[in-house]
Image 1 (spheres, one colour):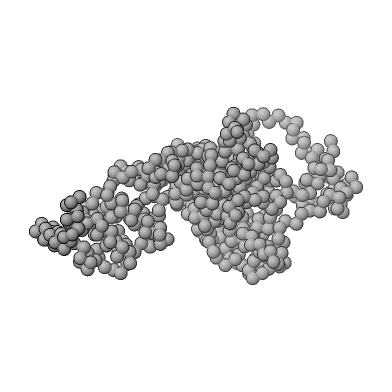
Image 2: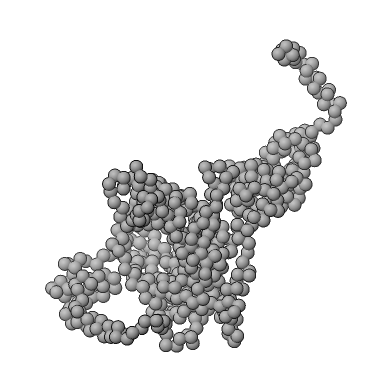
Amino acid sequence: LAPWIPVVGLEIHAQISSNSKLFSGSQVQFAAPPNSLVSFFDASLPGTLPVLNRRCVEAAVMTGLALNCSINKKSLFDRKHYFYADLPAGYQITQQRVPIAVNGSLSYSLCIDNKMSQMVTKTVRIKQIQLEQDSGKSLHDDTRSQTLVDLNRAGVGLMEVVMEPDMCCGEEAAAAVRELQLILQTLGSSQAVMAEGQLRVDANVSVHHPGEPYGVRTEVKNINSIRFLAKAVDYEIQRQIEELENGGTILNETRAFDSKLGCTVPMRDKEGKQDYRFMPEPNLPPLILYDAKSLPANMNHQQVINIDWIHERLPDLPSVKREKLVEQYGILPEHSFTLLNEDGLAEFFESVVKQTQMKPKKVIGWILNDLLSYLKQHSLTVKESPVSSSLLADLLNLLEKKEISSTAAKRVLVELWKGEGKTPLEIVKEQKLELLQDQKELEQICQAVIDGQENEVIMMVLG
Amino acid sequence: QKVSVEVLDHLEHLALVDFRDAEGVERLQKAIQFADQLHEVNTDGVEPMDSVLEDRWCLYLREDDVTEGNCTKELLENAREKVEEYFVAPPGNIPLPKLEERETFLQGS
């Protein structure tokens, strides 16, 4: 049987973190009373016009720069037409002809063979980033055969990030999205919380034999977490391979991922090929961005977006933060990944290191093996940890000074998890875990043990 | 060159216009003919124009402040049907009746 090459591309919609919407002044907020965050423009009432939100443009530029894109100094807005109850205007304002950023790349890492010890770096090309409006939300009431529409989300700014089909499996797709999520959160351009719909991923999947052209691709939607993304992609790859090996064909269709069944199913009839009748948005002129060289002399500051100014102020990206952690503390690259993967863990680690004499290389073990596994077991975030960085540092100091053994330290930690407010020293005293340093005392104890077990000692001596 | 029935049907689906009768379709054909005159001009190497105002049409950038919204009652006044504070819509897009079933001119063309 000839081998199959799976090909995976992603279209990711990230909600821009801003106070107000992309083209109107209504508020952006998750979970508010229905239709309370809706302006006349969002409801598409006649006579209203779009007015571009500066913050949304800055967010898109930051993201483009962080993903090594070329920022288009002139980009255009277009209308994409289709009918749906949660799209009151009957079209979405997007950037189809000339988006704000193009031709970037994203590097991400994977563990080979599920062992944290070997990591490999991969790159996925970013085709483009475009600014566009989000639609409202439809709540389907099947019992009454109706749809309830809430326009609070209609008009919220989105960055659509298109990743080229450089990935080959669910794991790669998941790792790429995770890294993108961390980058967006570091930049602050999006909070990228998938559970709150701030990051939505659609996967494009196809398979082909080596040397042959790409196969027909399907689009997979309704993926609600990074874990499900990996499952959905892998399932779809398998489904296509099986279908083709059984002599079937793949339809160029849209499928939804069913998380309960763990499979993809064809989506409700999508009326054949959609014709979106793209046309330039007549109410918006081109978006012009500047850099240090092209900065206009006499323009109002507030009306000018300077790409170089934004570039200078970009924070350290996750990849840079990881390198710094490895360099500064001598920890392994894999460790730096885990530190950045948990919200607040890197800061916790650094805080402990500051407060203890124990070497960072040893501290990291306590953070990753003990603290983190406890937090995971109890589904707690670092912020919710009953053991603060100072408490842990105190404990590690006792260990470092050889006042307690490693085993004893672990027992103290168990006590500390209870969060009863006791200090490590108090627990050590309570449970008499102090290491005996006195040689004579130790000899007496050993002798007493031997004396009390005469028979066993004879057995041992005899061999 | 006449516009085919398939194209007319496609347009009716996309834009929910109703060409209704021979006069409507003729009007469409005339409009296309009129626009086709644009092809007589050679525009090779010429950048498309966005506006006659050219560079003077600057895109205004708004500050990221919350200045609108909170008018649920007003908005819902326009709703034919509502449930609590939601607009009510049919369960999905209601498909346009098939060509054969539509009462318009296209049926007879």
